[in-house]
Length: 638
Ligand SMILES: [Zn+2]
Image (cartoon, rainbow, N blue to C red; front, top):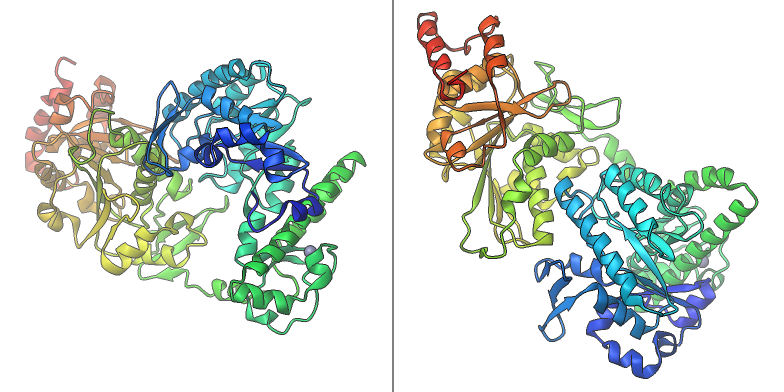
């Protein structure tokens, strides 16, 4: 069912194939209806082809009521609340009953931003389900397509494509994109996956996209697409035209007498003025949705026809260049004003300014010290790697099947140095992604900072800091706190003031610390022995792990001297190592055992180092301090 269209208008627009959602049809009207009616073509009076999805994607989009097992996806029916196990076999059985022309094998879809372990497990399960789907097809004449998974990991994508290509499928699809990644990530994944998909069978990119997305994907080898954008945008007054994208609700069209798109031959453009369509969409009349949808569908089908002609005439590259420029334009004849307003947004605030790197990503720079938060990698990418992934946040949040969400202890993150909130947002996104996949523990993020200017500045330039397009940062800036409306257990609060003053009053104590204060040149106290002693005291007897970007000898020895254990962290954008510190109980409880403790080699380097002591250590205490380090439990026996 394409919203607000009839079988006739779809046929007229040039549609040859419709997509039907197995998940919805399974629940209502149910497979039996199709068996009795003689299949979906007769049921909806559609003479063209029909592709049914496996039902998997819809289930993975459900926020809570589902669970993935080897057997299949278990979910609760929204019709009668019963539990349904959608196995590969039931998915095929339902698609056979629907009698589509192309069936899709059930896959496990994870967010594009999933971590590697999650993505690997989903790929393996998807392959086992693919084999079961083939077996379940039996001698049905319907085509069956497999779905490549692998999130944003090139090797996993390639492996998934290669392994599925060895099985006798009639076509191959790329799944798990258009769910959280950015455009360039998606295009890279498409390109390297499409290269591995058999050329003699259809290559299908699921759930994509805008005209520009389609053009880019065809350029990378894809043939087949599905997307609700043409009708979804039509509902809101958005149309694709030969003069760029046009938002018809804009007041500038109130008196516009010209056709929607003079270059278009669709019934809407033949008959109606922009002014009339503006009026219909303004009052949210369904007819406006229908008429604009009809135009957008015509636009898409004409685009695909022209692409096919250009490929056959061996002129695709020229066609691609010309259309690419057009699709990046917005309303050539009546350009909107906001772009001018955007350029006047302030690029500096208080002690901070926006810095745009040559690679194109933006960071915040401390004006006086010239120190940039995340200089070589986009802030949100480094936040994910250095803090969220090293802390294994996804695994910590995941609840075992036996655990009840209400009974599990809340995980507390101290986000020390809120800055432009990249670290906190990376944690929030991680929690939201995990909650979309399975039950999770509650997560409380406590951010510390004495100055909200860097967040305010980045937030005001969210076209450069996309990760801030979320309700959380607005809540922090306006109320000092935010509570997720989607996940009751997810909350974020701000503690303003000097961290080393406020930390003793901050309750509850942390499980994880993201320690991202400025370097000792700008903020000496952050790396002082006395500061880490205070921090260790605030950890109480919890097993706490701390992650920080520095690998400096003075910083590490201050952590050790205060009583933390210190281990090697992952590389950062400009250094081969960072640092992980943890309390003794983190070792006792086992969570910290995976880290590689600093050992004899580091100790030898430290003895030779010119920065051997914490910056705040008086000379008179040096000998005693040296003894403390040498006797530290982690160096015993070396
Ligand atoms: Zn039209």
